[in-house]
Image (cartoon, rainbow, N blue to C red; front, side, top):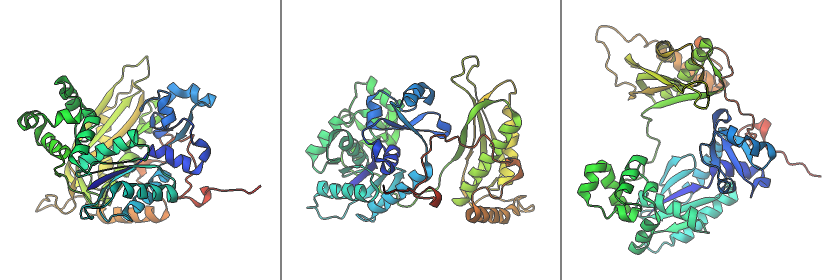
Length: 421
């Protein structure tokens, strides 16, 4: 059996752990720069507030106190996630961290007589007791089915645990799962299936293999096998290297200031380069993109981007910033006001596997040691203690988090204080 364990409304639940007065009240968490809603409590969902709703559209609800909003507190959420994952690891050594709030658990090899519903309740109780987060758990013979069972546990099971350990229970789970909610079936394929009158996972698995393979590739066929209870995807323990690294930011205010955006792009590139080095990779391509404000009435929305093929794969912040600024120069339009900017590194490859010139050493070979020293200083002295000059100083493109709660678990000066009366 596999299980998918998921922290319910995770960001909101983290806020409630340290402020119990939020229980039962509509709460939302906002994205970077308090732009859009990225997490909602059940009470907020019942108010009709959708994911991705711009914060300005619910400003009156927030100001009236009918809706409580928090800025993203990623330091808190990340630490709470690590604590939750450690508790999952107390029940099985097979843990695949799938996202900040969910993980696949591997229970293959457990005795056939194992009461998985009781085991799920034990996991829920321990997580709730030690870190205060409510969890839903779905058990099934495959990862795709476990994902579907988790959704059923969250929406339909008062105890928060669902188990499909017999053919009859698997069939029932497939009947309860909309095809658009199947893990591995994207929006485009879901729309195509619905046009074919396929609305549930049960109807999907009845389609002929040839039809699925022709229209959805081998991945679609594997999804079908998984839904039928035949394991295709194994647990992935350890974090695989990213295939792309993206860093972007929404600005507090629209801007046409070239120097401002230039510093922001340099900073985003340096941050991405640091992540690139942390996973031991080099990048072959860098893309810079700019976005105008889609909600600005007197300006047509513009999405601009330019990709540079680097002359050699590198992880040097100095080299990457140079080419990022060149890409920015290619797409810059001074008549526009920009709301968002970012960069993306692609064509990633492991260090030591790039093709070098036999007669001319790579120009960034001396940078490797320099980057190591900078990373080490920033690790011990604090992020961005040492920076490339092009990054400038901390400016308004840094996150605006007007509603951020304290970082209770990672900062001594923000630890929760309880006063006795």
